[in-house]
Image (cartoon, rainbow, N blue to C red; front, side):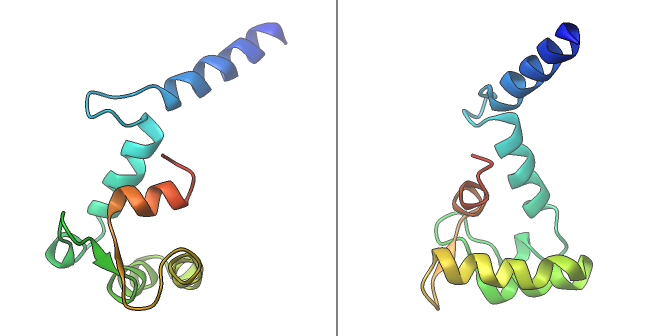
Length: 96
């Protein structure tokens, strides 16, 4: 039981430890996931980010169950017509 607790603790610390990019492993994984969505990078700007319609439509096409939550997340955190960067999106999901 104690060994299991320490394993969970170490795993949690490792997931939150900064990577060479300065982000936690969990945060970095979230950003990589977004960047690997088909069509994401073609519609993404490191300066302005991506708009909700483009991101959520792409996500819904590849993972239908995540489309609606994606639109809800954008509506909650960003006013209509604004974009978000990968770090902002992953931060809103509490990964960063």
